Length: 150
Image 1: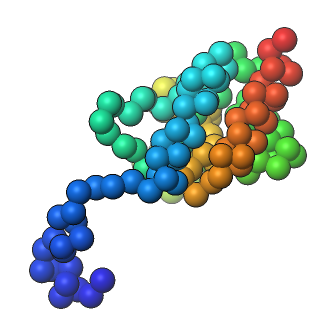
Image 2: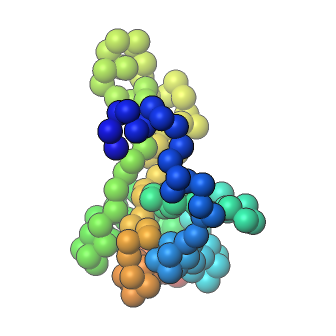
């Protein structure tokens, strides 16, 4: 968008009622299998989206707890072998070399941030996926965890 148009304020397209495509509606449902039928999986899930709200869910991050039988990094490697690409989008700030050197920060100073940093993984569950692709992710996760928690 040109700078002049951006500076002019809200465009007409934003005045229309918000409508969701089938893909967007499906994307909201994609996460339900993990939070619903996957409720038995020992993962910490994102906070539920309040009734009437829609979340982009461009990232669907969970915490891989010790109860899964996996470390986050081992689960990532296992899922990769099953064809499921994951990501780590969040790392504790004080563990980055710049902040460790500049402010003399070190592991152990912020244990809760470190716990989350060590456990968080972003699963590929988003609006651009088909239902079949989403179920592949959910089922690969379910199989991986069931192997370790039997």
